[in-house]
Image 1: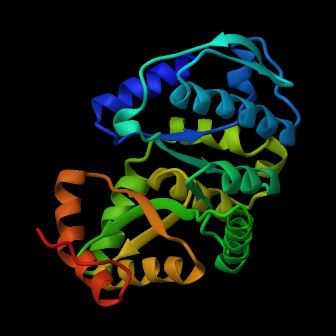
Image 2: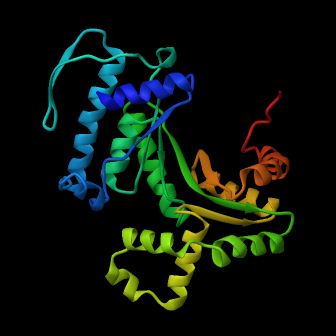
Length: 265
């Protein structure tokens, strides 16, 4: 109920520009702060489904309602306000497991998937679309990553080395490695593999790393589209400096490739 109110408040402030990424739990340290154990993996999505069912009813039903589920048993539930414009916020979900893909296909508008090994990603995308279409709905599949775009490949490589190697935050990277990789896996990595991973985390967490001139950046995004991805959510280091160049050089290339419609102001 509290989450429903907070989300809709942000939705009203942004006039319908709020989106909710549903994460059903994975980091035990976060649960330890509250003295909780996580559910078994697939059960997390069953709990997430009940949580979402209550949320959606709070956003759509006028009269108080009861809810009797496996995880939540509620009486006389009622909440205000309604979402902005009478339309619920967009829902998204990320992960690689079979349970996650089924959850996202059934309940969300878009899902995030990993771009590594595009052949495997293509199979997962086809699966999640098949599940969604069997339910009479369409779903978008996005991925994420980081972009370094400069006029030449050498300039892009030099800037990448500057921020991802020379000035990276090794303390933060250590924390991420310990969070995502168990000590046994870290010990089996060669020095070169470990350094490659540290460089990748120095550039930003996860996803596709694109470093190059505008043609290369557009080409990498083309590969994502060919694998079935609908969109690419990416970060850059200095938005005020880098986004204008991306807009000027990369977007027209994507338009010529048929991956993006030209925006007419």
